[in-house]
Image 1: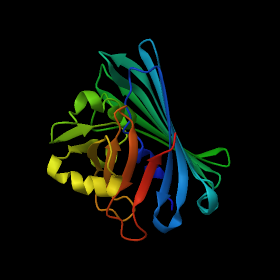
Image 2: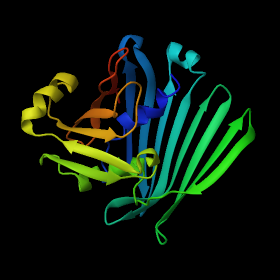
Image 3: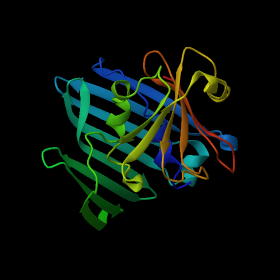
Image 4: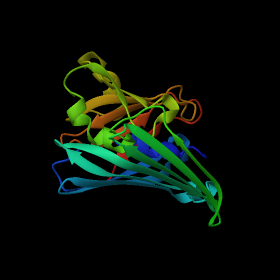
Length: 246
């Protein structure tokens, strides 16, 4: 249960709509026999050449009690260059059972350097702090990467894309996005449903639940917003699913 909400946001990130100054979406997260696990809200706003993205995930029902009211918040701030979001800072805040861990990534584009600072608190008191420079650099963090996907990926052209993002340092910043060929659509339609969708798979190279490589299958609507997503290959209780409800 500890890692459950940690990866909810990964399922709900495939959003675009940079043309809109404000964009909001809400997803219901469910996991096999457990039913609804939580709610995730995504928000994007732009003002001139600056942007703000926030992803808020929270547990609900019995899972809220079992996880110690686990909540997670992801914030990306930066600027816009030639229609692309460029991250200047990325913040991840996780809390449960009176404990709070905050990871702050500061991106120096001039020096092509990323500094990560981690602060741990318990009942409001700091008990751990560390800082290091990552061994890779990217203009994207995990949030901007997915908002920028329409400019990085051609959804009508079957292809595998190797991308990088700050926040994915466990896999050296690597994120793989696969646009499937038409012959693979029946598998996507079976998992995600039929509709006026574009399908793709995002892979994060770390073990999520009992999934070997974190394979996220997504159905993208014509508005560029993910309508449904499924985390595959779980051993215990079935698939982890996210469905857009707003």
